Amino acid sequence: MEFLSLLIVSILVWNSSGAELWSHLRNQKQAVRAKAADIKLYLYTNENTQGEEVLSIENLDDLINSNYYNHSLKNIFIMHGWTGTILNDVNIETKAAIFESGKSANIFVVDWSIPAGLFYPLAVWSIPSVGQIIANYIDEMINHFGIDGSDFILVGHSIGAHLAGVVGSNLNGTIGQIVGLEPVWILFSANNLAEILDKTDAAVVHIVHTTRGFGISHVSTGHADFYFNGAIEQPGCVDSGCAHARACAYYAESIVSSGFKALKCSSYEEFQNGDCSGNQEVIFGGYPLDGSISGDFHLDTAEVAPFALG
Ligand SMILES: *[C@@H]1O[C@H](CO)[C@@H](O)[C@H](O)[C@H]1NC(C)=O
Ligand SMILES: *[C@@H]1O[C@H](CO)[C@@H](O)[C@H](O)[C@H]1NC(C)=O
Image (cartoon, rainbow, N blue to C red; front, side):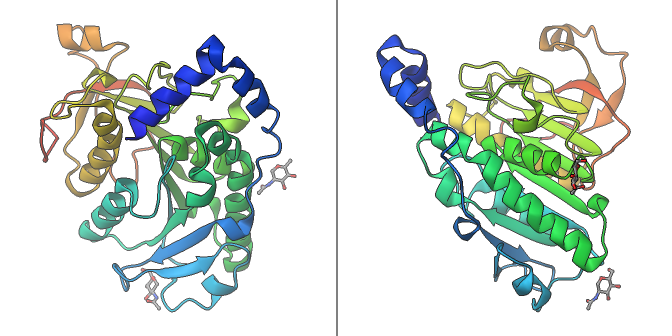
């Protein structure tokens, strides 16, 4: 469904018959500003893995009064993509994997479904304001609890990956780690670092690529970029929407299994030809990420879970 809508939007935007609509929309770019009241946080900890605590993002009061928040633990912020909700795969799968792995953490599921539910260009243009609101909240957490940017891990899917980048950018790259799952490049420019996910946004930025990006090619902007199955289609998927969501399943599996071996390689063709067989081999994903690796990596997967080929 998401794929179909993205396709329609991209046709509207690039087809000349959409030019008038497009110029009308462009005028709204600066006007799309989310309010803190439109965004909520759902807190899960090892003490409340199912029943979330709903927190206002307008100030820290709810968090300070939380029954579950423990500031000695890492803080994971998860951000869904366009038309997403707290029930998206990225939230459910990441959260389940962290708790299943036996690690303790404060997991904040970011509900930005109101701005993310707007018509695609408007949702994209809301990201600078949404990112600023989340960054302000994290900055308040750091100051109030005497914690550090390195105590934060951001996980974002689709346009939520770019949102995570914008949050990191607003915090001047002091965040510990960002996991970008299938950032979409429609209406994002790799030249505009303040509005995309890139390696200046955190100490460690790893990015997962699983599709061709719905018509706009992917670019490697992390410290490490992982291309699964050539990032065209995914085995076991019948459409790009499935392949797009598969990025979340791969990351979640990596947290519990650490089983995805990837090879440093500059293209899938060379990877398939065996030209990279002597290159560095690394393990994709996990929690926390391996901050020592950098470059482009390729790997293949199975059609069904467990996806790692080992
Ligand atoms: C908070 O986490 C720390 C580190 O794991 C642990 O030692 C402490 O007991 C926790 N506090 C509470 C109130 O659970
Ligand atoms: C980021 O840098 C700007 C410019 O130096 C500064 O005004 C701002 O306070 C910094 N923000 C954080 C959260 O470090």
